[in-house]
Length: 355
Ligand code: SF4
Image (cartoon, rainbow, N blue to C red):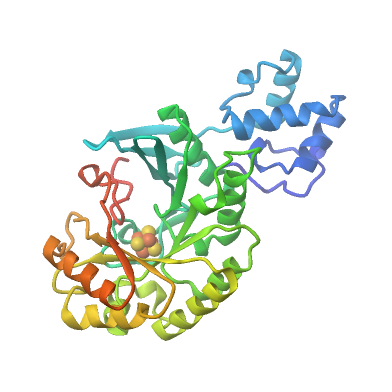
């Protein structure tokens, strides 16, 4: 991983090499000025780093060779490698990327006719310990930097050679336990000088870290929010999602009301249907009560099976019951087609099994 130990030191006094991705625009300008370069060079370098996803200084062909060499003497660039990939029968591709410190994460590209959606990770592993999740079982290795989150999306873009139309931060990790890096990555993905993806097509999925939900509501961009709900019964949710036990459902309900009032945007509730656990009559009634009268969309996902897990998916008929009953109380719900489940790339299946 690029070291940030030198962050804040004048760039010319840096002894340990920093990764170019970690430099602010001001620091880059300062460095290039100290190297006697004209002002426009900073823009050229930034284009290579953020728009073109250059992986080496030698790719920066519109910079003089001497400058490329001089930058390489002072900074590092990238060092992330794809160490494995799997391709699903539905066209989805799952990648295992490894960072220079040896930590690896997975991300997934999901193409449809004119679109390319990416599911990216915000942490390597996860500390939340959701009972149905392969990532949670492995624990947290570390949080990712904004550049590392951004780079996953660009890696998928380059591999498909297609524009990314949407991103969900729903891979490994809890984005709101890595809030600042997540927001910085979203801003770069949204920026015309980055990936240029519309804010409404950038979605953060959280299991309900309440203090960060209102912080997110107060951000100026119109990013989209998804909540992993999975049960509207406190006891069941505590069992399925022990990492958010301290944030009760009633508090979640209240904060989501504030979120909607503040933003006017419709949040999504993710609900993985688990046979005999959260698909019973009382669970369905509780879900209807939780959502009725609120601005919400429910995404029902038939649980993706995880090797060694005691949980099994509900039946399709039960998923259809959920859709009908939610509709009867005025709540829109859809059964989401889970992409890439044959390569363990679907929700809750990402882990470092390729390593
Ligand atoms: S479902 Fe998400 S928050 Fe829960 S353990 Fe898995 S990665 Fe973490």
